[in-house]
Amino acid sequence: MAKLNQSQVYLLYGVEPYLIQENKDKIIKQALKKEDREFNVSQYDLEEIPVEDVVTDAETFPFLGDGKVVIAASPVFLKAKPDKLSFEHDVDTLLKYIQNPAEYTTLILIAPYEKLDERKKLFKELKKHGEIIHCEPVKEWNMDKWISSLARDLHITVPEDIYELFTQEIGANLMALRNEMEKLALYVGEGGVVTKEVAEQLLSHSAEASGLKLVDAVMERDLGRAIRIYKDLEKVNEEPIALTALLSSQFRIINQAKVLKQKGYAQNQMKTYIKAHPYVIKMALKRERFFTNQELNQIMNELAETDYNLKQGKMEKALAFEMLLYRLIHIKQQAADTKATI
Image (cartoon, rainbow, N blue to C red; front, side, top):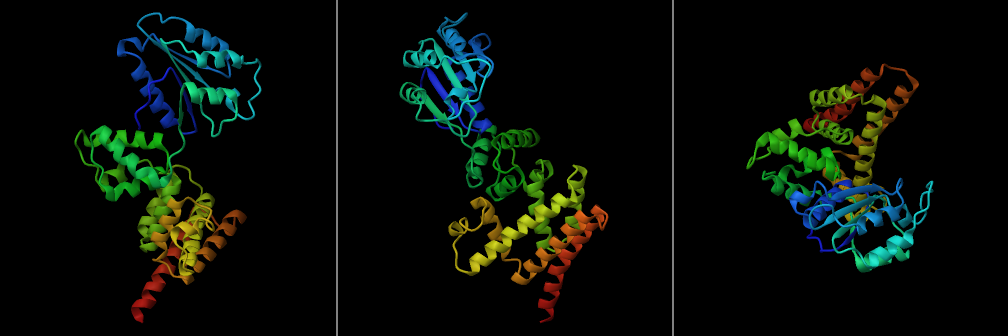
């Protein structure tokens, strides 16, 4: 995380809770001595408390110590269309405070919203007299630097060749990534190395990541592995209909990526036609070369037929999905056998 500028007023806004929490903790550590943090940090919810009460607290001298931190969450008056509350905020009181803040108080406004109305006078004054920190969600293709940074913070080593596994399993969720990295750090100990085997054993599995694993099992013609992945998903109540839809989505993107690649499109041009994150397209391009156009068409037909049968209740769900995995792998096996014969 970048070094924070020293300020009396901060606005943290965005929908990435990890960055909001990290920045909030960093501001508190920067503003207060360790022994003062227990008594001189107060928090308010601006959907419950009027902002003038927050300003009154900010203007009040600290009970103990040299400074205080006042945190006010959910400043709805910064949104383009503020939420209706049972009371009115006196925003002018906050505006006057921001222009001349108490030197002994650090005020943190936390706006967990995707967008704010930057045309409002209050936002402009915050920008002029305070520090605005945008806590926007991290993108999948930027996860590598976060894995590396967290590994350094936790004093463990995560080899670069397994970064992709983290992104597959966790996605672009920094809070989840932090939790998983802390779990791995406890397991391997300070100075330890997280191997692929350890990561596969300990990382929490998402349905999306398991969908990619099922694709890989089909690609590698490994029916046993495909069934094991499915059984693990079954234990966490993932439904065959949802898993069929997930596989359909994965193979549809792989198919689209293959067709566009054959037409000469570069990866960065494909996002116009494939409505998915660039990282997802990158993963699809890694897999498309293992399938022919004919195989992908057959696979899509099998998925459509299974989806129809599941929704019509024509087969027991678990059996229908296992049979689907068998047929998908059989398509790959047939292709391999034909190639070997030729």
